[in-house]
View (cartoon, rainbow, N blue to C red):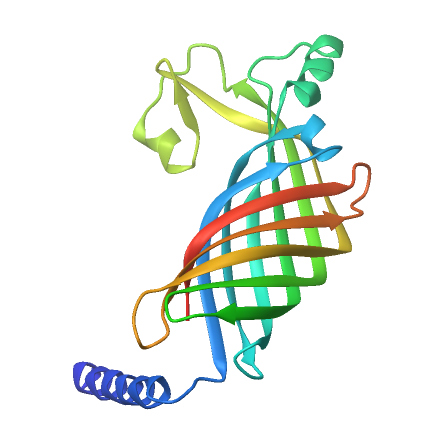
Length: 221
């Protein structure tokens, strides 16, 4: 019964997709990944890392569109963040992690030929940055690793049980904006395209404001 229902649902979705694809679609989607390059002042504290972007929106006509997007960017703290802490409080295995999550609404103006196209895009929304500082902790000197420890999520370093202890964890939410440009290459007549895009993102997050330039490659429709 489940297989039969699943097959029927797949046929319905496929038929709908064929029907939509045969018309000039009012919907747009995109999925991409790339590298996020921080610029000052963010660039003084975090290094380049990866990003993932997914979006969907509405086409008013062949030039004007609205696009809602979610983006995740990993922000790897550099020595400018960790070195002063190590000097003041020497500790084993000190490490940090930081992530940026954004949810934005954007306007896009595009010009496209038969194969190549280009666009400008900009908008704003909610930016949430979360940072965590941790240190490696040995759970009992000489405690040997085994399946029972690994089951509960403990790590194993040189055969000895260890774990990360969170020293501090903090998040900051702010409204921010972005603007950038992109270029497209049409893949087929159904409207699938390969795109490359560069955008500047700014958000007045607490402590240090966030300034980033994600460079993203992906596919859109």
